View 1 (cartoon, rainbow, N blue to C red):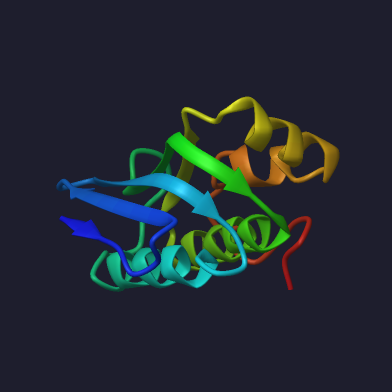
View 2 (cartoon, rainbow, N blue to C red):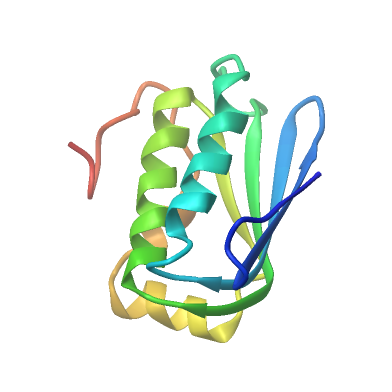
Length: 128
């Protein structure tokens, strides 16, 4: 299913029994960040909480990401909080160099890419 409201951003959602893949194409910025957060929230609403490793995972695929600004980064941090609360693993797939650099420079790479630990929802850097 393709979801698109903002001309600069297209989201394609593929659902499976234990994973959802959201393909992000275009710019993730001030004008479009809420579209991604809302789409992820809708997907997570129907999932049972994960139990340890092997639980459900959300894959954000950035293979066709254009530009990303601070609000795009904020969206990723909000999504991490949502996945932690839902007990769902988060994967950031096919990160282009611009996204990789942004995550490294802001010190958020480890937080956004670290595996979810059972019983640790809401703990750690950036939580609270």
